[in-house]
Amino acid sequence: MAGTTRLQRAAEDLRALELRRRGLTLEAIAEEMGLSRRTVERRLRSALERMGSETADQIRRRSEDQIDAVLRAAHELLELPNLSVPERVRVLGLVLQCDRQRTELLGAKMPSYLVATLELEGSGLEVGSGAARAAKR
Figure 1 (cartoon, rainbow, N blue to C red):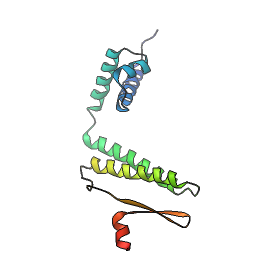
Figure 2 (cartoon, rainbow, N blue to C red):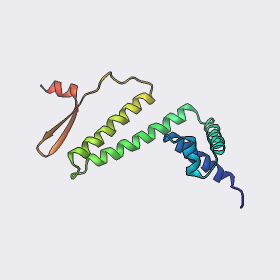
Figure 3 (cartoon, rainbow, N blue to C red):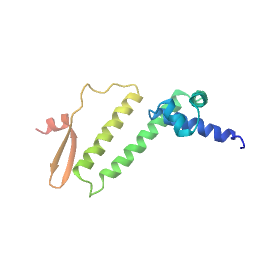
Figure 4 (tube, one colour):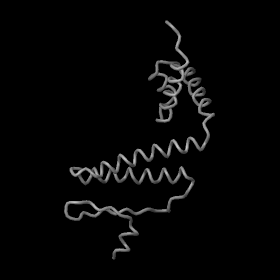
């Protein structure tokens, strides 16, 4: 059997890192990739060394771009007229989660609590913060 190319090896290293970031154990990654536990450890170390050349600012920008992409998709989903109320609630939960991740990414602190209200008005769904709702009263 021919050996793997450097590109294939780098792809395997990154795959191992992605599986680890998803929470898989070393043993589960080894089984998934058909490698030994020790080889998985080497693959992870290699992937992390490659990432070492990436600056913290580059990582932050890449993460911010991913969050923005999720938010764009979430807002597109919210525009769908046939989205049920439970589906809208799930999408809105995702939006709040993205906001929390962006806040952490930027090193800011979220308020100690965040209140979101959902109000059905006619056939639509209105979303606002608890503060905005209180201001209406």
